Image (cartoon, rainbow, N blue to C red; front, side, top):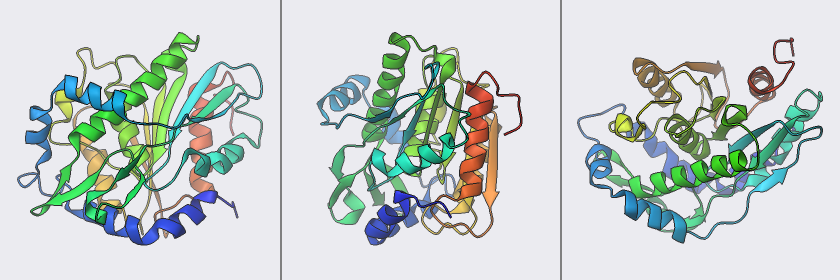
Length: 287
């Protein structure tokens, strides 16, 4: 069995994460008339979001250089309470067959911030989580600040000589949710999006955040979820995938029977196959 540091991280933060993420069963995708995200999104000022993003103290990402000639890059964002290093073992798993040697992996670190629904206790997070009335009150400013940061990482890679269509953006849980939003609203066409145990952010106002040109309308999205996930409920993943499909996006949702809020070898193997297909020169070969 794969020995991921992720398992230890989830165990360490399980009580806080359970308190925070179980509330996602009240996400606006399930009760759209009660959601607060649409009004908050419309009230958000781009300048405020930009200022917030630039003022956040961030730790540099963990960079795992390409084994061979660097021709592509994968950004993979961790979940609530974790760090980029928590996914280093997964990267080694993806590389073990030497079929992703041309890919550099970048594992960003979320800033540490107080989590409102967890009584203000601070932990690494891509955005705050709170609850108002009966619907999740999305932290629009925080979500958009993370989106701005992810877009800056993509732009830095482009400036370093890697074409946008050789970049995949992905993540787990909160990191995957932020990656869906950042990827689909990026001002350039990227190669793909990976979202493990994740959901759609800003669902009621999503179209308002898509740039003119909708560059990633045809970008493939690989979603994967355990049907026994009690933190980010499987029903939320299904609703998110259906919402994206209804907007015309190319979404695949893989279901893993019996899996909880974690990763498994079968799932990671399918991510490897996705990355190989989208980013390597031998992507059409069987994995």
